[in-house]
Amino acid sequence: MGAGIAARLSAHGVRVLTCVEGRSPASAARAAAAGMEAVPEAALAEADAFLSILPPDQASATAERLAPLFAAARVPLLYVDCNAISPETMQRIATLLGAQGLRVADAGIIGGPPREGYAGPVIYASGPEAPGLVTLLADRGLDLRVVEGPIGAASALKMSYAGITKGLVAIGSAMMLAATRAGAADALRAELAASQPALSAWFARMVPSMYAKAYRWSGEMEEIADFTREDDSASAIYRAAATFYARLADPSGDAEITALRNFLAPR
Image (cartoon, rainbow, N blue to C red):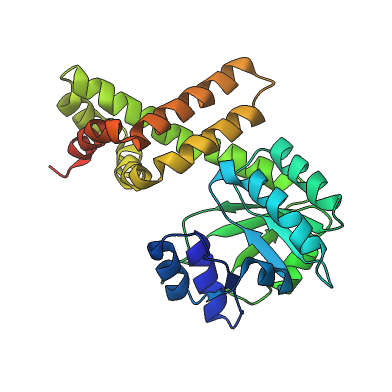
């Protein structure tokens, strides 16, 4: 997602900085291909805005590490947290950054990475700095929309949407695996195609896209569990989904990924 957004911005004349120190050669190559300019971490403070796009479990640690660096800049930048985190996590990050004198915007990305022929994703932003973010990146190739509300409103929207879509992928995948173990895969596949053709087609598109991202979706489910913590039953659903995705992401889950591929293979 980060590389896709960087490529879209670069194509629209934005100078995009990144730091690849300590990252893999593959990460450095992706950054270069997206038009990003590799600089020392300290040079990131020269930017007008910093878009944090990371696996959810790295969002807080990244903000904590970068806050003093950005606060020391001549003109403190706008820190935009675009990660799939709960409103409570977002608020903690905003409090941490605000204590260093930084401006903060909450953002939630809905949709897939930018690519040729696809206008999305939509980036929803909230908080007092959200209009300024939209103005800063106007006509730069991104679909930016302001969500009325404080810091946390955009994250709440992202959590709610992902809880439905990625939660449904978890449920569908779990039942495909259960049917396979019980010898009912062919019957379930046929019934879904006959009585739920739209859902069958959606699973055929969405489940395979999950395989390489299951490790990241696990952390996102943990954030959604936090988001729904006032409802014990709902929170338990998403904690279980986090465990499910973590299992698929582990090498020990390769057999289940193969089973899902077989279930969804064209007949």
